[in-house]
Length: 293
Image (cartoon, rainbow, N blue to C red; front, side):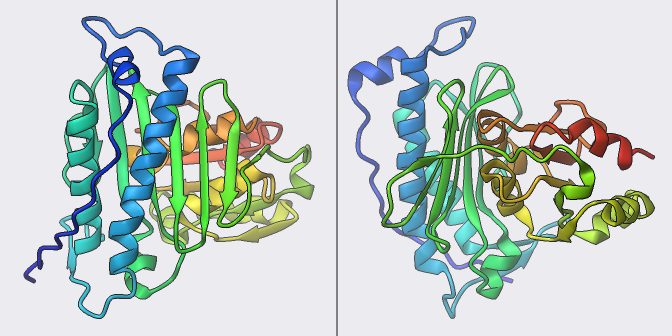
């Protein structure tokens, strides 16, 4: 299927020269200062603003072009247009940083690297379901330190930087700081399991069903949204098989700054494991044990 080019001219406001200079490192990368993190977070939110212009212009478009990638997941012209726009802005404003994205790849590297998923929830996007978003992370030596999750069709955006708290803003409202729940017992917990097919392929359906019988409530909210609900304290656990680094990197700072934990299903803080478990922290070890093979 031929992909029709989408050309949407968006210019990101230029970053303040002094701040940009402070974020360019020579040789070994040191951990960013709080001021540098705040500037990176501001820039990441600007990137999300720019992504919205591109993605919302294509949401529910009658001429949306859809293809199937080699891994059998869908991709639209909007996914590619958003990532192209983000990469162009990063080349201009952060030329010394590397980029790793879902649609145009790259290599995971040490140093300062932006990790982006232009549209998380593409299947929802192409069906007109508003649960999709742009995920933008900055990792330093492989450790995500800034994360922005922006869902324009829902009118919601979450963000965090290391040591600066986790926040959400709803369109038309002031930002508010968020934190995970205080639920301490699995029998009182609300669990999201995302896609059952991946649990079956991983051979963990029995463990999931046993956990589902233990907890108070289960739902499959899907994609980034379930993780942000953990960060906000509206649910307590989310587990899934199948996510890639670009699906998780932006989520990690938000969940951790909200007081929660995000690891692999086995409990290791490894976002390339191909699976993930996020919790309010209090339930994490019990959940890891519950879904162990």
